[in-house]
Length: 75
Image 1 (cartoon, rainbow, N blue to C red):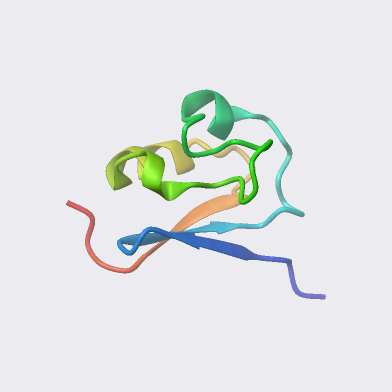
Image 2 (spheres, helix red, strand yellow):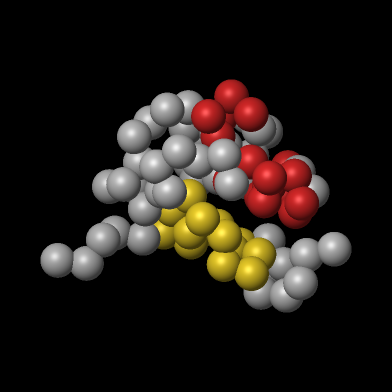
């Protein structure tokens, strides 16, 4: 059975979220609440921070539920 996958893009990168892999550690929300807000729908709003800051935060995901699919080189 394929893993459910959702995509959120800002034109430079796409965040790939696998909700069934998420362990709900809250690290994304605690580190960058302007982008990651589980009370909001959609819960990821990439317009709220610079792309590099988002990439840094996604790399902190302990479960790998959040990852980055680059559309073009992030500078």
